[in-house]
Image 1 (tube, rainbow, N blue to C red):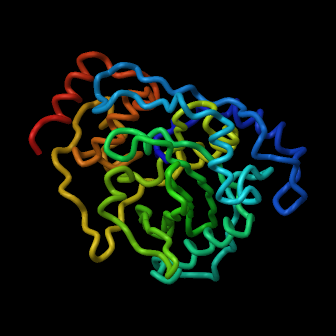
Image 2: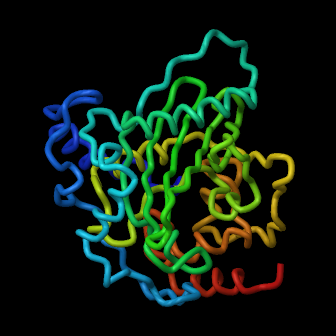
Length: 316
């Protein structure tokens, strides 16, 4: 999930969604038949722009069919995915009156476990995909199946990621809780194990320095409900500026040099829309720039690409 889905580019998509979803059964009502098997709507095709930034050739999973994707994704429980929806962000109960204090560790934990409970009970509305970023470079080069759901109230934004590779048997659960009581907001990350949330920081920071990432499917047909993905991306694009929480035992990794390229730093400046980028964030930078998602308004010019490549490969 990337925070830089461009603001304002989705109103036409969302207006179509309203027309589609108003007549659909709402949360908790009877589901349509075989929702997982419905054809995709529209999703921006992902194609390498040939920048030379990628460390490995583009991985487009040409041997994976949509039918195979649906079968693999459905092993998480078909009653949990492909659900009809009216609102893309599920509401959470409002907390009792509080005087601006930060969320407690117990509250963060409870929000994470509530998101998992709702997913397991088939009460959430996740979008399912094979993620572009998670199949590239140093992460993994095989289908990485994702189910992503979002929840919120006035004090927290909560995200759930249920994930496994094509060759794994078990699904792993991860969560982000954004504490909106703080200025700037504070992002908490954790893996949800059987014994409860295991706070994470070091590994998550490499891709999530600015919070949740927008949904970028590896291929336009390897996504279930692209309309829902568009709505979630709009929600992510409008998230507040936040700071990363590093829990005890999971410290900040060496950042390397800060990115000063103007086309990137005009947003990633730490004072405006998004946090600063450093060499430690090389993986998502390479992938999102090469596939044309960053910058959100135009491709980098040849001289800008040269500057970016030099920065990526320079000594920290």
